[in-house]
Length: 520
Image (cartoon, rainbow, N blue to C red):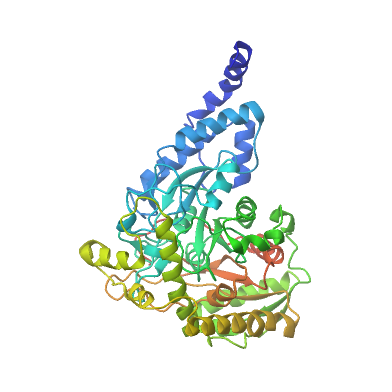
């Protein structure tokens, strides 16, 4: 840099230096818009924001209520923030994520000094050769990858008796609304981190409910995109039929902004060949009057599990009517509950095939296959299996190749019943634009003896179909958040976001957690 350039950067840095200490900074409930304005106006810097979030993590995640959402802090975070501050001063911002600290689930590869482990001790200490494609996109957008979040180990695909939010590496993540309650999973840490204001936005992943369900029980917004809208390259897999990464945020607008940064075609993921359906800006569909004239189908078979929750949801439906929506009630899925066994069969086959491929390509890991992983867990039983076992691993290991007739038939049936005879059938029969149902919750008590109970929730149809699903805060049951879902056919993210945003603006149910020990 020449002398003139040096002087220019020094002068530009003066207001930033004054803001960088962040002594009076408070980013609680700050949106991406709030952060962008603060950066632009020179009220604080990316370094100051990074420092604020790290202090909050230290005081609430590692001390105090100890919600245990964060697994590992990126040791390079301040260096990344400083570089982005310099870039902003010299060339301006790349976009709405420039300088924004973002947390990501610990099953997305990062080619840095952090491990990628899916919460398992078997992968601890190993680093990925390259970033997951989604992480590349976030870095390109100017995000500060601040930390990795805890999760239900192996994205909750190890045992049918698991405890959501628990991993051998990270222990148990706790619900910030009541610390003895479950944070749900598998994107437990990402959901809690957003809800507890450890970041403005975070990335989760979903195979069936792992973004939308924890978003619901932690009082935030979650988007499960159409499979193929977001790349899965570099994400520890369960199922290539159903896996996807998804945004988690406190507002629909922030979730849409994060989705903008995540979508795109990836030569390494064949599912994204259909990413021509991706749009450059999902925020343009966010209309506060978006429910006016909407035609929505109500899936009644997901009601009835909890009277208090039903009362909240009935009030939600009444509000949608007041906002001008026409409800077709009921508009039930004709194939409801008819492919649960086949879904699991598909997941068992695909988990073995997809994980073996991923591990074989991962450098310097001690386990190279599912069989190795099963053996590792047996050797480290006291650390890895103190509460539940690995029955799903063992069942998956017993499966054959993806050419097996049992797999092909199960996958064919799942696709037909979830799509043509499921969501698509309801959309066509009732001439609705989306389907509405309770997402999940309220959160049950953590139970280290019996594991998770059977939770009510509507996540399976969109998950098996590979179709989009958006959940929004819908209110509270005894102080515990519950969410309401909008889901529909492939690539219908624009209309789902429009409805979700309109509902959010009419109700504004989001309230920050107070870290109570229990529900009283």
